[in-house]
Amino acid sequence: NKKKANRIMYSIMTGAEMLEHFLDMQEYYEALKATGAARAQDMMTAIEVAEITLHEVVKRLTSLACACRSVDVPQKWVGSSLGLSFDCARPRPRGTVGEAAARQAVQVNLFDWGRSDFNTVRQHNELSQEDQHDRAYFWQNYIGGVDRLAWEVVRTYWHRFCNAGAWAPTFEVLVYDFDSIMGDDFLGKQDLQLRPTGGPRTVELATASGALGCVSRAAQLTYSVEHCTIPAGARLKESWRITMHKAVGLPIADEISRKSDPYLVVKATSADGRFCFRQRSSVKVGCLDPVWEESFDLGIAAAPSQLPELLHGTTGAVGHLSSSSSSPPSNSMSHSIGGLFSTSASSAVPAPAQPQARFPV
Image (cartoon, rainbow, N blue to C red; front, top):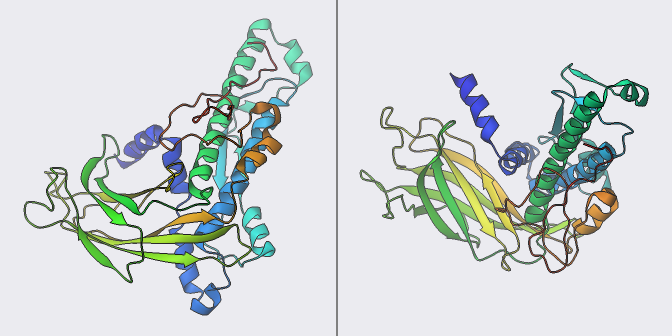
């Protein structure tokens, strides 16, 4: 059933994929349009709010990772969860007031489902050696889970918002058929020019066989690209807004229903190859001619990244990110269950450090 399929889908979803959904700003685009063109000029763009939001999440998550290491005795919070949220549907005015409001709307909270207890020093000392060992082992893995999420958030922030140079002259669009249990089926792709289109433009998609179009009719994609300048004083100086309007004539992935459940992925790389943007659209169920009307922004930072300094200030003994090296590439899987970043100047892809244990395991 649908509930079971969703459970399976969520269990196999990677941290990077979850953050793609977290940073979906389509509601903000709609709310900004509703304010009117004149007033919208005084409001932050969607990518500005997304950058501030993720910057705040980085600060709070890395601080939480440190806080977990400072407790006096290990805890065993069975079934507790860590939730991330922000207000994605309320336009924010430019300036310090708007930024403060955007940061205040961010939530990074631990919450419990009723099966956790707070372990005090006295209670811990009264436990048997075996139970103390059990709590220390559980707590190490719990810290590792917090670290892993922090690592994913730092990596996402680096690739999306730390490029102060240019993006490559082309970007890639891939279309897939969604499957909640099995792997998604490839439907088509196209490399597009990152330059203003002056309105919607239609191109043909290359399908899985490499030929353009389908058996019955040509598969086509309609998109537009707009270059946006952001007023001086903002954290970002400009952006490329890519809007995916629609597709027609997509291949049939499900032979029984004679339909597909298409979604698309937009991928872009910086001109120097250090940064990679990836964002997916919504899924259009049972449709060969989907209409998305969804926008994706490639930002350019106003100044070189302050991310290394931010991590130095919040993580302390947890780890460090050398300002002379880059964060892991977006497709890197060189993470561990614990630690954030521990790098040397000669390392292009940092190896995460193991968490520093306060308790013997």
